[in-house]
Length: 255
Image (cartoon, rainbow, N blue to C red; front, side):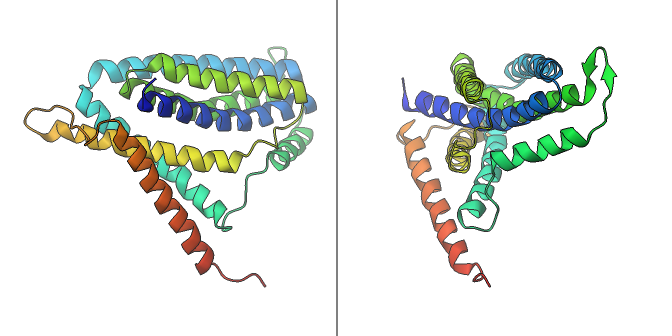
């Protein structure tokens, strides 16, 4: 396995695990508080929608864009997406943004489920169905985006899909065994790592894709090839750590 493939698998696995943990928390709250049958049907509907979106979007990207244009478009989107994750992670590490807490999220969803009125449609508790469906769909769309961008750009869709599937299985098995929110997962640390990986690969592929504006329209090559990925990762890590330290020094002292 090359360094690019190893990084791809790691990034997809970690990003998918974070999203699946958040979706699992919401579905668990609906199942425990309202009705498991409706929550599971909502989950199944969300997964089916995600599979359809993945198939259509992946086919469209491969068919309509040349390789260099694909690298530029997907790399730029991935870089923007990664910087959003990285920005939030830096603010959390600097103490300027509240850390995400799955136990708290579970209790909030549970309270909302208890307050909601009963509405039976198609033999299902509609509130549990819709909330579970939306949770799986919204969190899953980020997973689909990452799988498609990494898989299509690196020509390794099966490998990217395997990383996402492994994360899904791990979260579901852990949740089924514990039957409680996965609060012990170091989610905020994972988000920092994922932000770094997304920004790294986004930079790598977007620069390669700049070849689309040259006369040959061929992808540009990085010095050292895929080893440049490790250098970019080190640069993004150094910049992020420097940002955290700068924000900590600039933050006002607590009263």
